[in-house]
Image 1 (tube, one colour):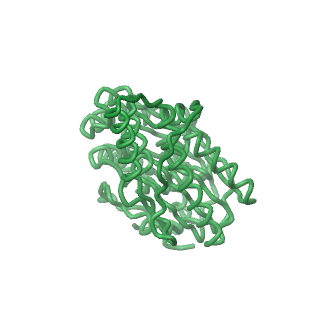
Image 2 (image 1 turned 90 degrees about the vertical axis):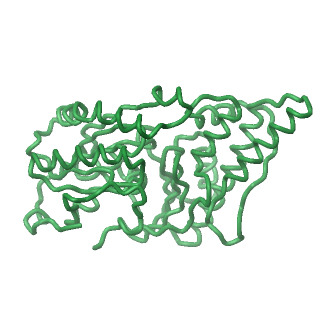
Length: 353
């Protein structure tokens, strides 16, 4: 990570960051002003393509990114109303994610940055999800982030802006991954999370399922056992010749997941003295989780921030918001920066306050 010139660091003109996100199966390009104002945010989803395979196929995802990235770069700049030469920097998701998909975005971002003579800012995908909240809310520190997505389930403590400390993570399946596996067992198409959420909300009955708390003082999560419990319930019912209502199973699964997420998040907020709880990631769109967290935080007198739906799933606007943290401090990337599927959130933290 290199530093901007003193001239660039002290400028008072607006900062316009063009951001690129290609970590998985959404291609997205955005232009964000001063880390808060979204001037354009284009998203091309591959859901229909991967639905036929029952999940994301990495090689197919990479090819789809290649097909649309150039046109989306042009359209995002045009819709923003900003001339290319007026951009301050080019940001791109450097990791984590699918390595082939990340490479497409990084090559595109490097090429544009070199062509325009602009700085490059390699950005952490989860930092983007967390700072998606900053696009619509004012953040207060210290803060606690509950990150729930297809590949991540984490509790992240932020003592100050851009400083991340991981205090809890999943030991096996992430929440979104578990939802998709349970949905498949219930006969739902990919992506399964929204189907399970809908069925759970409509269910009049519930199949009781275990809560996985782990050690008494642990903020880690484990979902593979709960997923197995769902499969066992379904298999035992089948062996007995009984028919279980899929919605009742979905409700039991969702209640078991949500109760643990909410309880650990609230406990972490209390222990670390956080001023706010931030819900982040694709599963933040889950209505059951949003409702449970809102109700619990209201009872506890805690401030809960949840991004609008469009900023919950993968998008480039959130990458622009996170990249601005680095821009403010003059921390930019070398042009030999590589895609890093295992990029550490804590190590990506800003170096100066």
